Amino acid sequence: MTEEFAAGELLFQEGDPSDVVYLVRSGTVAVIKERGDSPVLLGRVRTGEFLGEMGVVEGLPRSATAQAETAVTVEIYESGQFLELVAADGDLALNLIRRMSVRLRKVDNRVAQLVPGAESVPAAVNTQPSSDPKPEWSGVAPVPVTIRGGSYALQMYIGTDPIKVGKMPFTVGRVEKAPAPDDDAEPDLGILDPEPHRLSPAHFILFEDHKRIFVRDCNSELGTVVNDRNLGRDFPIDQIALKPGKNTVIAGGDGSPYKFLIEI
Image 1 (cartoon, rainbow, N blue to C red):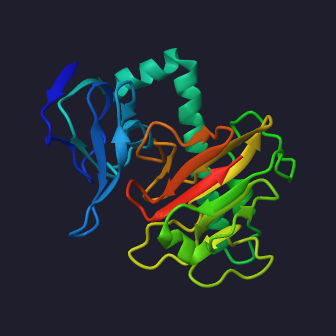
Image 2 (spheres, rainbow, N blue to C red):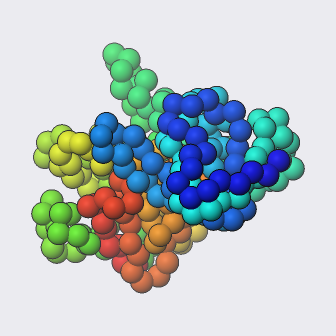
């Protein structure tokens, strides 16, 4: 079934039941997180991309609001129709399995931290789903990788000098205090993000797979933007390969002050 929405019209609101999946045939849909009186624009879903598929697969309410930014035409799939589509499309099925595995491992890690005496697996390892082809976790970056602050706000936290990424995987996220040395529970690059938080405790991760460097959003609340592509639970993908040279990574949704410049 095809449906059209005028600019400014809502496709669904945060908290609505996840009963259908949208495939954007034309136009642009803004994805917005409700935060009291100050909603946050997470990013945009564009032509050829799915919208709302993870809510249907997980059986959870909508985690964000979707609003037509331009005139939009979408193809609507009922739950059963979408599952039939997944069964016929191996790449789509693999992407959904990969994303579900990330979420499951995050829950497993949280349970391990809450159960007394449980030994938790380091968060940086937990973010790699078991359904993926086994990455080359060499422990060192295969090529020189540096991180700089791309905004004044981020430079206030991490300084202006480039940070060399000497190992893989490398996690970036929020800390409540200055990170303790050699603390596996802390991100490799921890940022003191004041409230209202834009960063999640483990927000995104850099990892190597077959000599390429990828960014994966770690199921963060507000998502990650990599070279103008939106990653996260409210978008069609969770990870993307970085290109040789300079890359822009924005943690915390579109317009976040946490803009990283990552050079390979």
